[in-house]
Length: 265
Image (tube, rainbow, N blue to C red; front, side, top):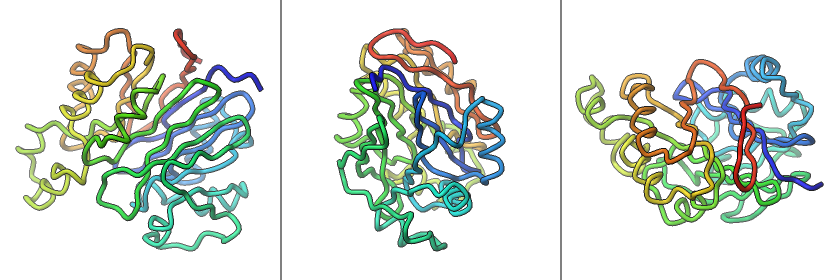
C-alpha cells in the first residue's frame, strides 16, 4: 500500500481517561484504552471511525486512566494488546493470554501497513512506553505521561509530522493549588508529568519544520487551563496547528500528510 497520510484523533485525554486513534484507510491502532468500551465505540462512531479497522491496542503504562477499558475492548474485538512485561505485571486484571504481545525498547512492530515503534520513557510507572506510528514516511508521536524529555523522546519528536504531547500543568497554578506537597512533588519532580513550560521547551527547541499538528494532551483539570496552554504554544507555533485534546470529549479527526500540507478530515 502506498501510504502517505494518517488520520489521528484523541478520544479522551486527561486523568479521567486516555485513548488516542491513529490509522489510515485500511487499518488503525489505539494507544491506551482508558475510557470504557462503550464510550470508545460512541466517540469513534461520532467521528465516522470504525472499530473494524482497529487492529491492535498499544498500552503506555498501567495507571488506571490508560487501561480501565482495555479488557472489555480487547476481548470484544479480539484485538492483540502490545504491552511491556513491567506494565502487565502492574495491572490489576488478567488479559486473555493469546492477546498479549510484549514490547521491547525501540522495536518496530508491523500492523498491516502501519509501523509502530515503542520506546521507554521517564514516568513513575513500571516500564512505561511512548510510541511513534508511521505509514510510509509520515510519522505521528504519542508522548504523554512524561517526567522529563529524554534523548530518545527528543530523537523521535524531531521526526514527527504530528504529535500528541503532554502539557499537564502550569507551574504557578500547581504551586497555588490545594494539592498536598507530596503530590505536587510527584507531578513536577522529574518522573511525573510535563509542565506547559517543559513541553514548550521541547516544542520550540526540537520541532521539525514539517510538523503540521501538535495536540496538547493530558491537561490537568485543576492545575492547567486550556486557553492558557493554547495561547502559550500558539505564540511559538511557526505554522504548526495547535489543538488542545479535551478531557471530556473527542477531538475532530485530523489528516496528517508527508511532507507538507495537512487538512481536517
